[in-house]
Amino acid sequence: MIIQTPPYLNPGDTIGITCPAGYMDYEKAAECIRVLQEEWGYNVKVGKTLGSTSKTYFSGTDEERLNELQKMMDDSEVKAILFARGGYGMGRIIDDLSFKIFKKKPKWVIGFSDITVFHNHLYSKYYISSLHAPMAAAFNDAGYINKYIQSLKDALEGNWAKYSCDPHPYNKSGEAVGELVGGNLALFVHTIGTTSEVKTKGRILFLEDVGEQKYNLDRMMYQLKRSGKLDKLAGLIFGHFSDMQDTERPFGKEVDDILKDLVKEYDYPICHNFPVSHEKENFALKIGVGYKLKVTNKKVTLEE
Image 1 (cartoon, one colour):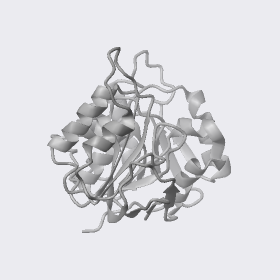
Image 2 (image 1 turned 30 degrees about the vertical axis):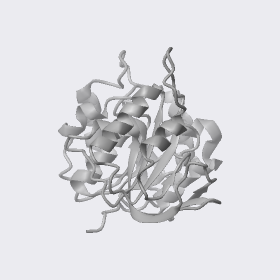
Image 3 (image 1 turned 120 degrees about the vertical axis):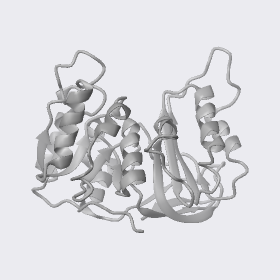
Image 4 (image 1 turned 180 degrees about the vertical axis):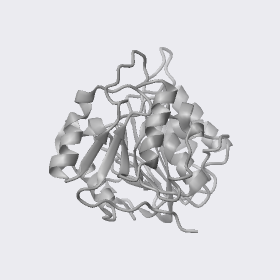
């Protein structure tokens, strides 16, 4: 069975922007909207959840966020949906979304972090590809000439990706071919035991996270391990684990050592410090699409 990939975009197509989780000021998405329209040639349809009048953490009530996302999923004019930000909230509405129209006419859905829930759900239940990629705020950092932002443009236009990064002393050499799955570690773990749980056997799994305690990183990795998610991978990619924190009484290991020790018995290729993250370094990755991972002592490449 071959993964279903949504149609790629052409100039003049419409991209919808919505906030399905945390609140975001409209001004923080202004540069993104400008680039999409003036530089990339797309039309943009902005939802009311961006810069909403909400006074809580969320960009609106569960019902408001759900309804706006549902309309964009069903709107034939909208060819792709770019989430303005993640945060927290997708898990509250994912089970109430209808994919009746979407699965017949899929479109690219773009985001990371909390959006991992949507990616997992779409892949596991409907076998449709989506884009783990920079969201609206990323355009403020380096504009549209940033290579990570450019990777999103390339992905939307149907250009096949080939990424590379420097070797890491904890890497395990080898080659792997498989469908790419993963995303934010906390959210990937969060979907285990739900209808959004992803099968990992024979897949290349990538993981990243931000702002976690070291002990919690260790705990989540053990949950992946104990649930069998690491047993029969084709390959494993660790992205950046940014702003990791420690308790007053130290955990006793650095982040890279925590990760290395937890996967030391596996013989598939493993890459550390790949540029997928909550930082600027965040290449666009197509969930469910076949990739080849090659890890050597000189270079790491990941290509469709």
